Length: 350
Image (cartoon, rainbow, N blue to C red; front, side, top):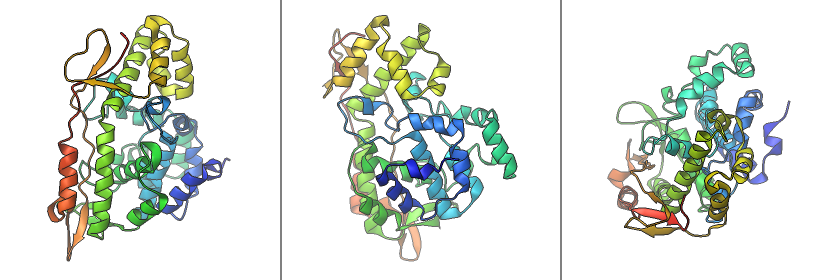
């Protein structure tokens, strides 16, 4: 049996150690199943990592899932909740939320989640492990039932916390160091929110402000022109290739991104390989507030706004940082009011 940690980049190992000083051994069996290992070939970058417009570290969907599980384990020591976190992205296809764009799910970006239960239930290895551990599929197939694992925006959950930390570590853009992550993470506790439900929150306002400031930068990056263009471009390629039987919908869930890119590079339908190469080698994107003529352009739709307004200790109670911090309120407003150009494009017709 492979020890998952042994093959990880040293930086990621140190990051995981911050999230949980103990790596629960039972996770190894589940991580080594084919369904989870498939996630090792998918980047959390939604495909943007493959263009020269970006300078991002490789961080896989599997690493994200394990990190979420470690956060949950650190705060709850609950095996079922931890496994629900591990499985929460098991239905992630290649290029991640790009496929939500293909499905026209710009705002929620949840179009692939319904496959989670199906994938788990059809995995002989996972089901055998669950039976061994006396856990039912209903207890681990929907992490939304555990508020520490997941909750509604703008609350702080393990999933939302993890992708903010790792994206700021370099998966989206290098903004902070491991020392910053440790400072933020060690300030987090479980508290009760306005509804009397458990939620992750901060002990100190200054740390919450630091977290919100970086989260705001990342949120705007998720919606910047080159990111929206790249996701829609990859979605359109996948759509055209599936319509011409060059790739199947099943392939999106079965293959790695490396394998799909090989198919794209060999596809001459509608000059797909040619235009993909142009995008890969592009170092900047063009923008316009009017529709560009004879260009492949993307109209920036109403996008999902990812932001967090965490709880923070205020005297003897917990309050939303927006209510008690002027700087956090400014950062959150800037995130919510962020505007892009109406169109973004590259110089080819597709």
